[in-house]
Length: 185
Length: 146
Image 1: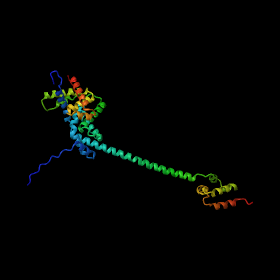
Image 2: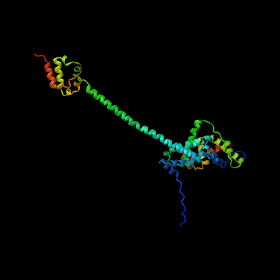
Image 3: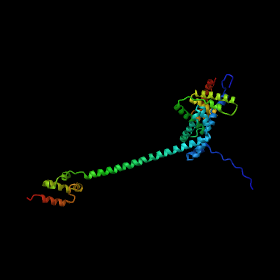
Image 4: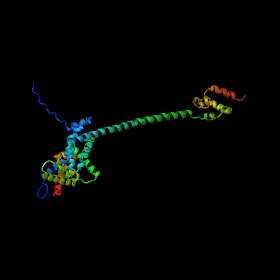
């Protein structure tokens, strides 16, 4: 009896491969892309001011728009980064339609059951304040800040996604931080 | 957070990193994936239906145009065929018995001409069975004996 050969881990397909597969008619490739990026997208949208009650809809709409326009995606940045910028556009349109103020779901935050209740409340308060302060920023500054501070992207990547230069992205980020600090004093 | 309530850079980044995480956790990823796929499927069907209809439009237009051309051509041909020549008109409404000798001679002359020899104008006046020779005989019979 021969010892069992180690099974090589099958590398998961890249985003580019999944996009190509979907364009070739493979539905499940689209589903896999959605599974892969939903959480990051939802986090970005929630941070950018999407009301929690509408988050599902905004996430779905973002994916739909992205798949419609995927032929224009030239790989100038990662698919996820490109997706987040589309999410920003969807959110802007949703805000324009709804014309309603963002409600910080503080009560929902407090309903969370993990961790120390006091820490949770402090954390939720800080997030709520930051969320409100972000709404006061110009859209570009807000998105650059979130892409950098929340998503951890490099300036090169941010610049490629937003069609600007890394230097300009850096300036937007620093302006955003300065204004957020002033708002949070 | 500092004592004065301001956020330092590192804290700001930390709060930003957590921002929206709880809300995102509540999103049902699998349900989202299935919903997106269903919508994409529906959108792919809808343009196909639209495209088929759009594609068929020129075909129908071409068929309609061809029918109009055929029908129009038929009408024109019929009109041309039935169009009265310069002499046929009076012949249609005039009994040969009412014609004078000069008129009958003129009529005979026109029948002998190649262009007028076509049976077109004669069909309508009941002379289609007469050859030029027969018409000449007819004319001769009608001439007064002098």
